[in-house]
Picture 1 (cartoon, one colour):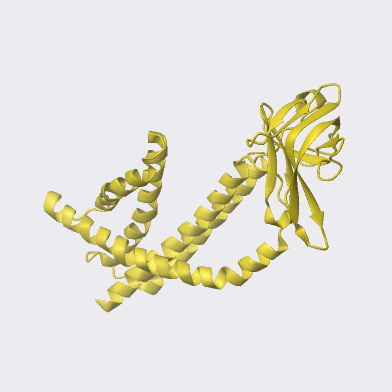
Picture 2 (cartoon, one colour):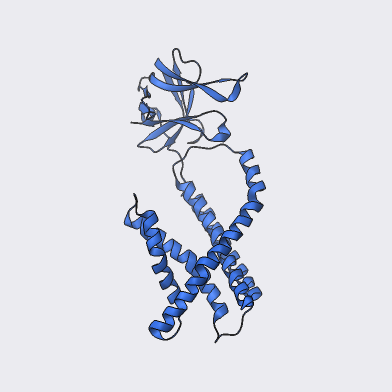
Length: 299
């Protein structure tokens, strides 16, 4: 019994590991499709990730073991009982059926607020698949009418097919991103940049087609190295001036230069993102590696 428990635990953990790897790839691709400004390379963040990797792996293994013991194994038992009770024999399809029925209420409870039926359906199918896959693999170790298979042998097969699946997912992600599925700021021209932008707090910046600029309580950020080079002093800028647009060498490099009388500090170069219909201007606040932005949205 202990050997079977260890074999099922090993098989389930292995499948969950490769599911997590494929999920990370899918999550990265999804993130690349979302509207976002160009964020700087964060060397400190990379260092923290490298240091934290062993601890994250250990926490992931512990979580996987907990999911296996508290979810996967009970699903195996429930699917077996349902098969014997309803049809007189066990069948593999009882596992996804039992999993789908078990996860439907909690998924509905989590996604019910502020989401539509498609969101719930997608989350339900995803959770069902994630939990049913390790249960189906572990089920092979419990079949009495099949040649016995050790946990080590099962781990080898999972490692082989899991690696192939992860490599395939990585390749497909690369192809999709190379094909242009990722987000890219709109390449605008001077006429498209012109308009009124708001910060959502009462501040507005109006860029007239003739090159005039009018600011009304737009935040500016001044830095004093003697105090804190990364903690800005925020001042509201109101006044008139001029603006120019530099298309530069591509969407991420285009800039809008704004000069307002009386706001010489902090009101200068803005970067662009958003969409063609609703462009946005932004500047970094403090240390660029902190990814804090001050954003103006086109009305």
